Figure 1 (cartoon, helix red, strand yellow):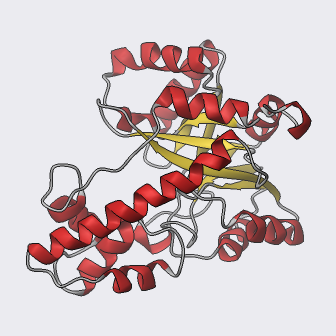
Figure 2 (cartoon, rainbow, N blue to C red):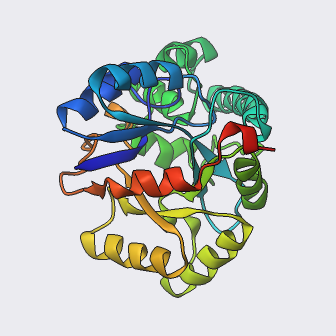
Length: 285
């Protein structure tokens, strides 16, 4: 049976609660899921409880945006518990960096003639970690953009008028912190890292030497041929080929939990492969 190891909730930049995300997974007949909100573990307890009630396997996770000059590099970290640890301790600082960046974005938009307020953005987030999709949603409502993606293209993406960078971990820092926390670091949607097809193997190999455990090969936006190609590369490097929908609710229209655009299937053996890499709490540094 299929699984989905890349899901977002209202605790970061999704539009569905952790419990609703689990319910959607159950409706799809999934055997396991991972909640991977950005820079936060806030939804883990609720999602774990809902998954237990629904009889679905659950992996606690998080998604990190990394400092990578060639493009956008994101790291999915699996089996990251709520207890204190090297990476868990850094999440609070990453969240503070997001908050400061969001305030600067709001100030830039006001200067550009759009009277957006921080209170509106926080309300849009539902009290979770505020991200640019929440700002984008407010911009759509006030007529500054036609859609979430259009808001990014016009105002919020890198190089656009309201873009503001924020502190991020380097790939080495994030991977090492994840490993020291007993967790399993996996490269998310590798097409965003900004290297050519010929350079993928070298980039993956370099990250594997730092401790990367897997590559998100089975991804919603990839055709089947690319999914299988990335899975072959991962296997050849001794890495796990993982996957997920990257579901965000209405912030990413057309994506469904478990099936992505309708043709996604992440094999359930990935769950055991990831679990075999995670270290129990008593062995963590």
